[in-house]
Length: 294
Image (cartoon, rainbow, N blue to C red; front, side, top):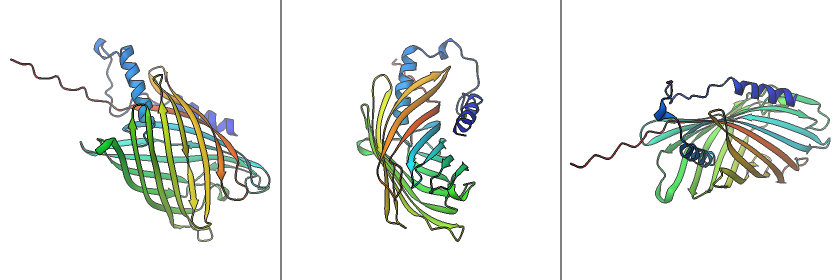
């Protein structure tokens, strides 16, 4: 089933167009063909923007996660997160960045000897209002609402609750380094009455370093605090990614592992991640030539 899910996602990738809405469909002339130096600059910029959750970069990540030895039956859980990121320029000063996480899950014996379940999980969608230019000291930030939608196709794959709350991100990039944090708080606001309410804080501090060969090393946590059950879940993730090209389409491939420092009884102890990201660079306006002196 996991192979079917991955193959279906990757086959959909093949049919995706390589142009985004900001690009003009036209035949390239000699002046529009990228030189090796321009290609190098683009790869460096893309590697840097990928470390920024609210960069002005259209991207489509397919993030595959596998967690092992869950619960009393030592079950396993495979999650393919489809995570489109769409930046919208509201005006010359402000962007709206929409980040969606739609999980496709295949799990076995996660809740004791509960058998296998495969389908959609609950969807999380964040809306960040962010200035186009960094603030004082080069600080990049964004704030906005986050929505939580009960899209799960099985009771064991989701919460059965609608939720919402605030979200924020703060980071600084200097040289090859990116340091920052993303956080949100979600409260349930409706849904199935016989399911437990949601009050959960998500906290993701991160640090990344990108080399001159566009390889990025990232360490983060994707920690959740469940206020209803007063319980932390703290996975520690170490990942490495590389910018490549498939034809003219830039992509990023990431591989990593994680260790769970804390979690509820029966939590997974370790897991793996493979992330394949399609990148659709938005058009950057060329600087106007300086006026000639007479």
